[in-house]
Length: 142
Image (cartoon, rainbow, N blue to C red; front, side, top):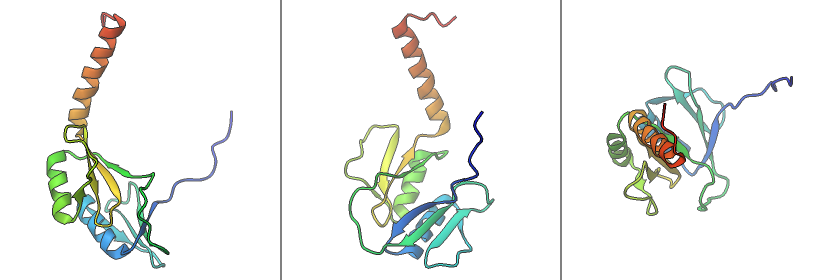
């Protein structure tokens, strides 16, 4: 049996041209609050203290290449969350599909994030997908 390493993820760091502005956007969208931090970066996290922490660090040089990492948000109501994100300064990504289980947006600095369908809608989708998979295999389900 191998021992688990004594390490954990502390936060997800996002390079930013305006750390305060971007942190303000994400605090408003997620209901997060600023956390104590002693650098030029801005750290935010859930009010409860439990959950992922985001750190917005000043970019040394501007980058406009597509990020290989993005946030996936699972809201109770996707349409309402997309509307609120856009009202806060997000914009729809030009490459997002109109009919999908998620909506691709960009935050005010162009960082991509996805607003996924609700847990309930995903559970319905997964149940249908499981049923279709069983029928293709010839399972009777009993």
